[in-house]
Length: 258
Image 1: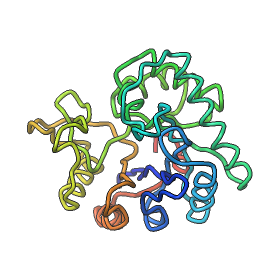
Image 2: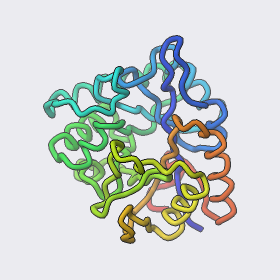
Image 3: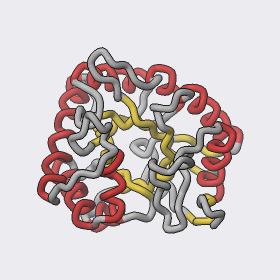
């Protein structure tokens, strides 16, 4: 039986603006990546999302981003490695305060959007994010694009890392995600996205946009919480993984190497 962690980007509402279906998605996932106020989220939303994750025994992660509320963290901004280190540490610390107040802890760190994609290719940025994660808590799990510079940087520093794949994103032949500027970057059809997730979880393979078969080491699969059908997708994906005898379990619970 294969094991997989199922994570979702959450806590992305801001002030009076509501985004996502967090309460409906949370029962079907095992890890929640909570926005820390740089691309989305605010102090009230962070607090509420931590409490919601606690209710469902879902592992809590800091979803760290470039400072880009207007662009939802999806615009590339030029930052130095020192800035990447500082903004990562800042955001982990903010979420950790809410986790501690709720009697729980941050279990993992995952960059968001443009920062995620930049750190997948830029070893200096990847190293800075990994160092900030380690310096805050060497027991944190660092999430990054499967096979990319980010999990490699974490491994070099002795961190436990999670190679991540995506159920509803197309891939390029080099293993990168199809840029969101492309019209077919996101797989909107639920059945097609579930089929891709099952291939990744059961076989360790994914078909690229050009038709090439890629092998992926995958520890966790992401479900996007900003889909209009996020709750339905999460429920159906969880049911499909269960039917395929894939054990869906948080990486913070599963022992390393199991």
